[in-house]
Image (tube, rainbow, N blue to C red; front, top):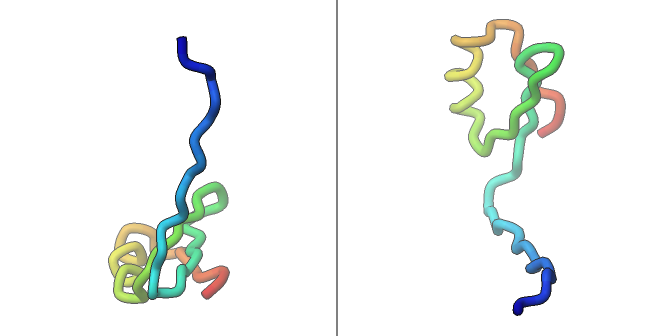
Length: 52
C-alpha cells in the first residue's frame, strides 16, 4: 500500500510579471500581458488593474 504523502507542487517560472485584474466585485483574475486587459475590458467594462 502507498502512503498518503502529498507531492510538492512546483511553481511555474515566468519571465513576465503577473498582473491582477478585478473584473467585478467578486472576480479577480491574473494575466501576464497588458494586451489581455483589452480582451477582458470588452467583456467587463468596469475591469481595473489592482496590482502590476
